[in-house]
Amino acid sequence: MPSLTTPMVQVSRETPADESLVEDTFYVTVGIEVSQFLLPTAKGVTFRPAYLAVGVQVDQGGRLYGKPQRSGTFVATVQVCSGGSCREQDVTLVVLANVPWEPRELTFPGKAGTALNGEIGINGGPAGVVPTFTVTDHDKVPEGVSIGPDGHVGGVPAAPGISEVPVRVCVAGNCAGVVVRLIIV
Image (tube, rainbow, N blue to C red):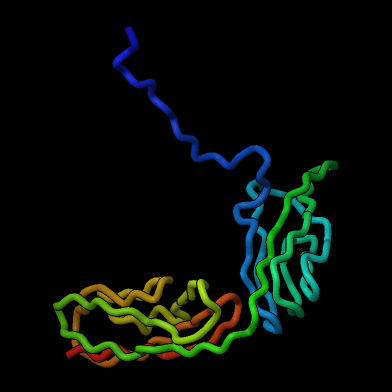
């Protein structure tokens, strides 16, 4: 007779043994300066400098730099070194065409003590690329309000007032600064 119990499966949160990097795929835009870093899973590692795509390189510290010259998907092998030995790991660089984009909905009205629920969005940009939003001066954000990396504007404003919050919006490395205006009555 078959067992009526199911064996317990334990899920490991550890990085697979063959992975030396936290992330191995990067999205960038043709003609826009790259400013990203490879994040190793271990401390004290270095990288062998290499070309990742036309116009983009990685240096010994894991910094990706340069300006991509051609769109496409490029896979390059990077050597991650610790002590006297090096391991190879593939890095994928997805270089997107420079498609113009613009922010939309930058003003959010609200009422003190009442929940805000809005979203900063963009019009245009390459299809399928999720923009990121970074508040560059947290002191400008009113008490009780938050602006998330996904562009969500939420929280419960504590007091009335008008706030102008600087936010950096990036779409595959194509970044611009905007001002988000919160009008709380």
